[in-house]
Image (cartoon, rainbow, N blue to C red):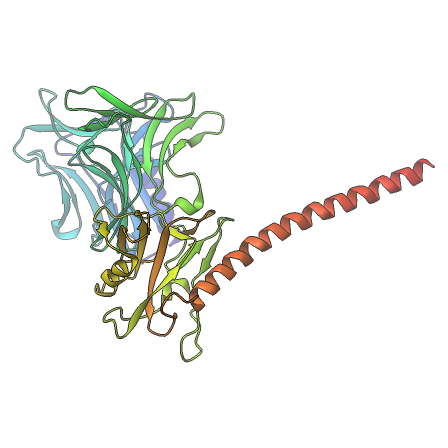
Amino acid sequence: MELYALSFLIYWFNHASCKSDIPAGYRVTLPLPPEYNSGFTGRAFVLETGNENPDFRAALSVEAVNGRYSCSLQVFLGDAKVWNSGHSSHFYPSQRCVLELTEDGELQLKGARRRIGWRTRTFGQGVERLQLLGTGNLVLADAMNRIKWQSFDFPTDVMLWGQVLNLSTRLTSFSGNSSSFYSLEIESNKIVLYLNSGSWKYSYWEFRPSKGQNIVSAELGSIGLKLFDRKHRKIAQMTANADEPVRFLALGDKTGNLGLYHYSPEIGKFEASFQALNTTCDLPLACEPYGICTFSDTCACLQLSRGSGHTVSNCSEGFSNGFCGEDHVEMVELEGITSVLRDSSQKDIASKEECENLCLDNCTCVAALYSATGSTGEQGDCILYGLVSGVKRLDKATRMRYLVKVPKGMGEVHGKTSRLKKWLLIMGGVVDGLVILLILGGLGCYFVVRKRRKALLGHDDT
C-alpha cells in the first residue's frame, strides 16, 4: 500500500500544472487501490483559475466511503470543497475512475467496462470545452462561449459569490444519519432551514423580510445574502460581520448551522463572519435522539427503568420498539421542556388531551408539543414529531407542554408526576449543579491560594 500511495502522489503532481479550460476529447484516469484503505483520498487537479489567493481548482477525486471507493468531480476554493458531483449520490466504480469530455460534448465519469456513473447529458449541443470560471462556476461552453451546462445550477451544501438560488433550488447537507439531512430552502415569504427525517420535515430557523415582501430569488454578494422580489429589487439582506468580503455560504453537515465565510490572510484559512445559530442547544441535533440539552450546553439522556429493572443507558435506544395502539403506549408530559423543531403542518386543536390523542393514534409519532393559546389553556397548537430531537430546557415558565410517547406503565396518568419527568429534572439539575460547583470551587481555590501567597510575602518582608 505504501508503494501504491507513492506512485499515486507522483501521478497527482504530474497533473498539478493545470489550465482554466480543457477541450473536447480530454480524458484523465485514476486507478483504484487494489485493497480498501479507510481514509484514503486521491486527487488529480485538472483545472484552476490562478487569479487570486486562494484560487479555485477542479479535481477528479477518489475517496474511501462506506467500505468502497467513490469517484467524483470536485471544485475547491483553497482547501474548502465547494462543489461535488457526488454530493447526493455516490458513484462506486471498479478498477479505475475516468473523467472524459467526449468528442460530442458530454462530460462523463466512468469506471471499468465504460460504465457511466455520472453525466451532464449535453451531447449534440456543440460543447467544445470545460471551463472553470473565476467565480468557481464549472461550465461547459460552445464555440460562441454560450454556457450549455454549469455547476451553479446544481447546488450542494455551499453557495458561492454570485450564485443564485430560487424557489426550485436548495442547499442540502447530510448529517451522517442516512435517514436525515438538512436543507436551506427559498419560500415565498422567508428562507428556512429544515431537518428532513424520513417523511417528516421540521424547520429550526428562518429569516423573513421586514415588510413581508415576496421572495423570488437569493444571491450571495460580498457582504451577505441578498433577497430579491420578482422585479429583481433587493428587499432584504443577511449581512456578515467582517471587513473581508464573503467568499461562500455553507450549510454544515454535522450541525445543520448556516454560515457566511470569509478568508483570513492572517491565519490562512476561512472563518465564519455570520452564523444563524449561536448556541449549542439551538442546533437541531445537538444531542442524540432521546437526549436533552441543558443550560450548560451539555446533553443528558432520558433514562428510566423498564418493568424488568433494565435501564436505557444509550440515548439512541429510545423507550420502545412499537408505538402503535393506545393499549400499549401512553403520553408523558414534561414541563419546562421544548423543542427547537417546528412543523409547518401544526394543528389548531381544542385541548392538550386532543394533542395527546393525535400522537397516540399515529404509529410514527413519538412525541408532541402542545402550546396553549387560549386564556383558559383549552385552545392551542399541536406539533407531532417522528423523532425525539432538538429538545432543550427552558429558563422560564411557559404554556408549552412537551409530551413523549412511552410504553404503558412507564409514566403515571391523570397529571401525576412521572418517573421520566422526575429523572429528567433531576439529571438536568445535577448536570447544571456540577458545572456551578466546579466554577465556585475554582474561584474558592483561587482566593485561598492568593490569600496564602500574600501572607507568605508579608512574612518574608518582616
